[in-house]
Structures are given as C-alpha cells and as structure tokens.
Image (cartoon, rainbow, N blue to C red; front, top):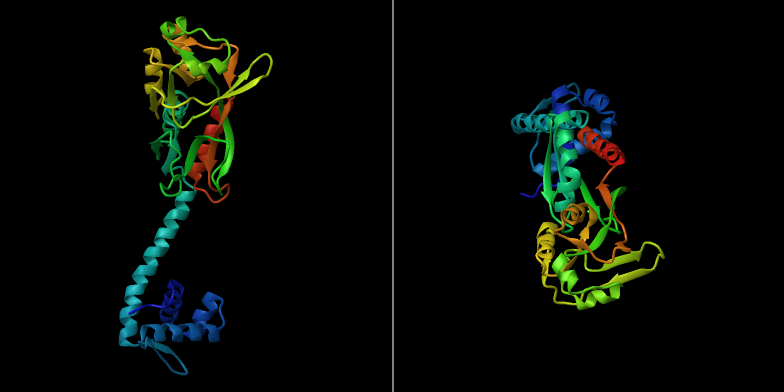
Length: 297
C-alpha cells in the first residue's frame, strides 16, 4: 500500500492520542481544532483504518489506533533523540570533520596544522581524503576542502588561504646540455607534467612580461603526485614545473637546478572551501578559525 501522508501527520495523531483530547492537542500544537481534526481524518483515510473513537466528551483509541500509537511513538522519540543529538553536537567540540586536500600541499603545509588542531581538541577527528583531482565534494560528503583553483564550486564559500608559486626545474646534467634564456625555448626540452596543471603561466619578475607555455604531447611522464614528478626531473628525464615550497630543498642540495631564474610561475591561490557560514557544527567552526589563524602566522 502506498502511504500518502507525512511524518507530521503521524506526530499530530500521536499528540492527540497522548492528550486524549483534540482541544488539548490543538492547544499544545498551536493549531485550530478544525485543522487538526481534518489532518487526522486524512491520515485515517490514507491508512484505510479508523484510529480514534470520537464522542462529545473524549477521544479514545481503536485497536488499530493502539498499535499505531505504540509504534509511531517509538519512531517519533527516536527521531527526536536523533535531532537532539545533532543539536547538542553542533555546540560541542566533538565529532568528525570530512576534509579534502591536495596530496603534496597537505604534506608540506597542512599536516602539522591538522596534527596540532587534533592535539588541542582530543574529541574531534579528521577524515582526510587526499587527491590532486577535483573530486565531487557533495557526493563524498566533504565538510571542508582545500583547492588551488580560479573558479569556486557553485554554492560553496571560498576563503583565500595561501599562494603557491611554481618554478621551472631541471637536473644539473640536463641543463648543462640545454641552456635556455626564454620560456619559448622550453619546447626543445623533454617535459614532465604534474596534473592537473596543463599550462605553465610564467612572468618575468623584473619586466613583468608574461608567457604561457603549453607543453606539446607526449610528455615523458605525467603524474598526479608531485613527488613522482620531482623524482623524474631529478633523474634527468625532463624539465618540470614544481612548487617552490618543494623544489627549494632539492635546489639547495644540488639535486635540482632552477631554469629561467628571472621567470616564476604566476601564483595560484589555495582556497579554503565550505558550505555555510551560519549553520555549521561547532567543530567545523573551530577548525576553520584555527586554519585561518595558522595561515596568518
């Protein structure tokens, strides 16, 4: 049988049965008696069962009404309990936060912040999904995401957090045999690509000249992970466009050389994304405020 009533109809019946009176139930519900009576009749018609015996002085339950009252009472109490639990959780520093973030940016810039936050709030957990691909945030039930992007997903709030600058790098051996002075000469060198960056947007730091380099296929290697890309560049398989926060330690150790030192990648802004400013759990508000403070330091 197809049921054509809402849980609210069930709740109205439950209040009437509990009060034993339409007038008392209408007072509790702040609803006209005529409206309440009509809603109960509609419920009975939908169920094709008489639930209440009505007379001038009182309301009593039929046999079917007793069974329905006992069953729907437990269901409504469970729903109320679930709602109360969520309401209580909204104001407590507890529960799980689902986070999406890029692999290497998390390792170098975020992991220590996450760990410090978890130490400060021992009842909060983080469920971290690492990917350089733009996953479906809603499908994966993500509460908060970090993305280096120009366009923010529809209906998500964006807060600029950090800027990431990439530089063109090579192994010392490869550049010894292939000296270049302008980005247009990159086309003569083998390339290692880091997805999803398909175009290297470069700017000359003294003159402001801009150059967009789109590597021609096929690249010697394409990968989603910057450690894999960097390892291929270090081993001389091609040049790569690597974030400075990663490349700097390998340049200092002599494993990498910076090509075109007067040219840098145009900074890409990492955004902090979340859905709602107001109706969010307390744990998420704490986490957002913590991240913003940490990024300002």
